[in-house]
Image (tube, rainbow, N blue to C red; front, side, top):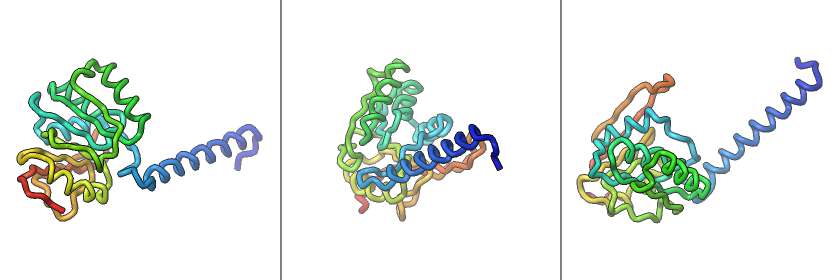
Length: 192
């Protein structure tokens, strides 16, 4: 038991702050327009996603729910690919633009504040996702209707329901966490 008054107040403040933060994440996940809470993809996982998709300088990489923009920025920096990040949160879009400028790839990437459920992805050759399975299922008809045959979709951690992945990559990341990536190569079939 903490007996020092300053430590007691500090402990109460810490518990209150953590509770508020947890509540904020619950609200983000439950927001009707949000497809997932913002959880940054670790950089080693980003690299693995882009490698799994076989990204080259000829690709246009769309990241739906781009957060701070690290996936399109990495695609531009590593491969010279063009990148487009979509996020509904204006704060994340501002972060992504600042990050692109800091990395010197602002001429290759753009970030759009828009609901991923309404974006036109037809120019994408690669789409990356770190959304909930339910969100992936909501996006599946749009992706399969708009993407050209041969386009690749890579999802971190979450599947597309009954659409079997062409490749599944399970690995341990640099922090010792087991990760799963799913890759689909679009064959032109529209899936509901």
